[in-house]
Amino acid sequence: MSKRVLVTGMSGLIGGLLKEHLNALGGYELSALNRSVVKDVPTHSADISNLNEILPAFEEIDTVVHLAAYLGSDTFEEQLPTNIVGTYNVFEAARLAGVKRVVYASSGSTVRGVENVYPYKEIAKGQYSDVNGPIPLVTHKDVRPGGVYGAAKVWGEALARHFSDAFHMSMLCVRIGSVTAADKPSDPRQKSIYLSHKDVCQILQLSIDAPDDLKYEVFLATSNNRWSYRDLEHPRKILGYLPKSSAEDI
Image (cartoon, rainbow, N blue to C red; front, side, top):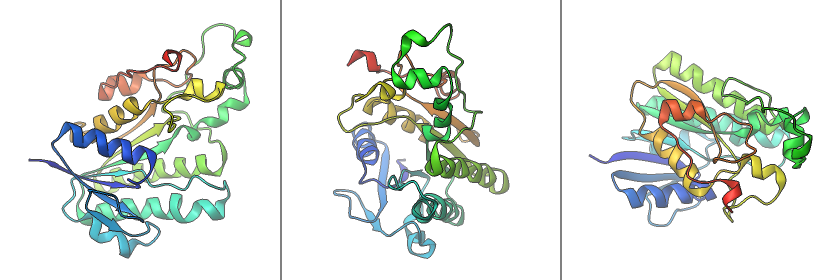
């Protein structure tokens, strides 16, 4: 049987990439929760800030991939409707509908604050000659948000932990690196956090298909970049994630 997957924010860059990837593989019955209609996919048009309006989209769904996010102004007022209230609504709608798993698109911004200190500051600026010795890797256990957006994503991860514990749902959080339309880094900072189109689709698919008994995890996700400071051993061990791309290959 096909796995019924609802994707929020499918009209975005990553949503479109995931749509093409899963359709090419086959075995997935896709639907979208989106403010605008997504071509060739059954779409429930609603804003995730309104719980009652989005509820029908979750009926008879096996897995939700929650990609919808507000990426504009980094103020609490602008982050609140989509990234805080909207995330709660998506999780709650999934719970009410009996959805087995939610894959939450968190962000590397949950740890971006480390770029204020050595050696991550130097790496982000491309000052590699100023980095001495091995780089202490940031892991899935670390939290140091960059801005209100990063803090909102930390809150989403904590909320996912609550839903997993309280309602026995599988809640997997992926701290997505820098995915660009051009599929290449545009500055020194992006060289360390670059996540290719192939690799973002890989880790999201692995999260969708992870064993049912995997109830809560947080994964950092970048490609295999020379100057990455984010640990990829954890997603490799748990999911089998092996990035195929590298910023240095471009």
